[in-house]
Image (tube, rainbow, N blue to C red; front, side, top):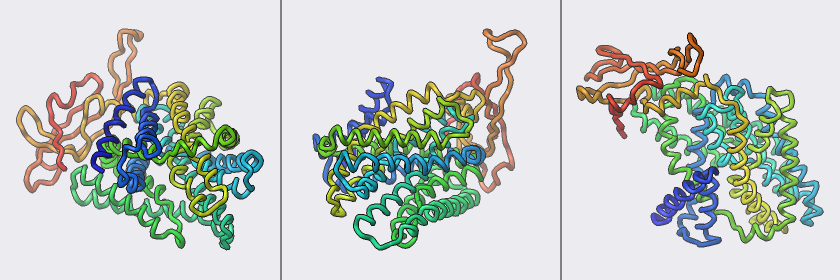
Length: 494
C-alpha cells in the first residue's frame, strides 16, 4: 500500500501541475490520473489501497469541510439564508423530476427506478465544489454578496436531502414498509441534530483551547480527530437516529470562528497544509472508483438523460435565486457551480445493483457517466466563470489573508524567535485595520490609498509569567513592510 500512496502523490502532483499550466483546475487532472491508475484501466493501485479507499476519502472530505466551516461567518450566512435554503431542496427536486420524465421511455425502466436514478444524480459534489469556493473566498471574489458562502451552505444540505430521498425510493423498490412521511421527517431531524452536535463540540473545543495553551498543530489534530468521531457516530446511529455528521463538521469550524477568530485562523492555516495531501487522496481515489467500461454502456441515451436532468436542475436553481440580490450573471455562476457530480455518485451508485434491482447495472452506468461528464466540465466552468463574474472586493476581509501570505505573518498563539537577539516571543494579539498611505504616482494629487494592515503584539516568554505581563512589543505590517522572516523565525512545535 505504501507504493500506492507514493504513486498517488507523484501522479496526482504531476497531473495537477499539467492541468494548472493549461489554465484548468488541478482537481480535474487528479480525477483523470485516478481513473488512469485505477483498477479499471492500468490497475496500478494495490487492492488493499482500494479496500481502505472509503476511509481515506472520508478523512479528506472532512478536512475540506472543516476548512469550509472555518470560512463561514455569521453575518454572511444570515445574508444568504433564504436562497441557500431554497437551493438545498428545489434544484434536486427539479432534477429528479426531469429524470423521471424521460428515463422510463429512453432507458425502459419503471418510474420508481427512474426516481432512484434521479436521486443518485441529483446530489452535487462537495469534493469538487467546496475547494473551488474556498479558493474564491481566499481571493476575495464574490464575498460582498456572499456567493461562495451561499453555495457552500446550500450544497451541504443538498446532499443530506438527496440521500434521504434516495433511501426512501430504494426502500420502496424493495417493498420496505416504513411510511414515507417518517423517512421525510428524517431530513430536518438529521440536519438539526448534525448542527446541534457540531455546535456543542465546537463550543467544548473552544473552551479547551482557551483554558489550555495547546500548540496550533495539536489543536488542529484534535479538531480533525473529533470530526472523524462525529462521522463515526452517524454510522452507529444509522437506522434509529439520523445525524447529518458532515454538516456537524462544518458547524464545528463555524462556532470556533465565531467565538475565537485568531484560533480559527491558525487551525484553518494548518488544515490548508493538510489539504495538500488530502486533496491528492480524495480526487485520485474518487477517480479510481470510476469504471469507464460501465459508463460506456450507458452510451448516448444515458448522456441524454443526464443532460435533461441538468437542464431541470438549472431551472430549479434559477427559481431558487428569484428575488435575491444577484444579477443574471451571478445566477448563471450559481447554476454552473451546482452541476458537478462525483463523491455521492461514487458512494451510492452501486447500491441499487447490490440491492438486487433489475436495472441496477444500468443505473450504475449512468451514475458513473455523470461523474465523467459533469465533474471536469463543472469544475472548469466554475473556475472560468468565477474569475469573470464574481466581483472582486478591494476592501474584503480576505485582503488580510493576501497580506498575511505575502509577508508570511504568524497568527495569535504561535511562537517566534527574534533573529537579532535569539529571544523567544509569543504572538498574543493582532489587529486588522485599513490605513491610508500617500497616493500612487498614477493617482491624482492629494488622494490617499487605503491598504490593509496587521498590527501584531509580541510577548517575551518567561518561565511562570502570564502571557501579556512583562515585556511586550508591537509591530505594524502592510504591503510595503519587509517580510516577517527577515527579522523573525516562526517556531513550529508539533
